[in-house]
Length: 220
Image (cartoon, rainbow, N blue to C red; front, side, top):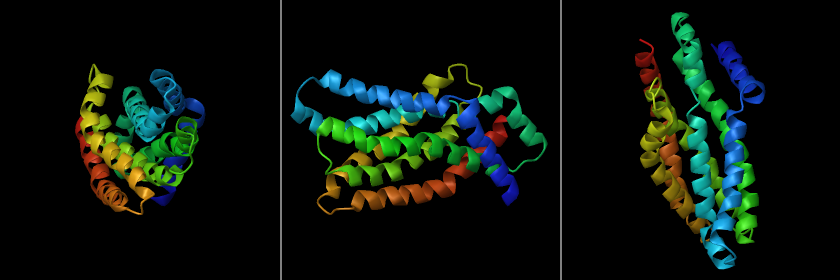
């Protein structure tokens, strides 16, 4: 089982690096959004500083929404998921490697890029640590919450808009707590971080299981 897990994880990493541009497109979209925000807000440095953290979180949200559409899409359309089902490959391995691959090649690069844009927008590095920890908890939640929704919309004709419409209500609390956690970090208040940790712990336990059930039903 362990050997099979690492085999699938290697396949997923190879797909992100060489065979697919889905992660590069999401990161490029994030970079483009971050460049558009200061252009849209003008030369008001105080406004840029006040909205920097919120702007970063919104860009992270839309970058993840773009990448989530292709989480199971290619394997479903090519029939690979059906072959996994026929060969009785454990769904837990498929879902776990998909989740790890998506976060490693989409969420993790954005985490390391975001502090640079925080300095670019606000001209200050005081909130870098708070932003880093909030995104470290928030980006896995985007992946985990998006997984069952991406599985649920497999085969839908207007899959992209439907995925966005269903995902945003579940992502909004993560953005709210993420932004509040950065702003309260400098004052020594960590309640939002504890809340994000609790949501992440619950999500790790239940959301992959829900994703597995949805995938089984969609392949019947």
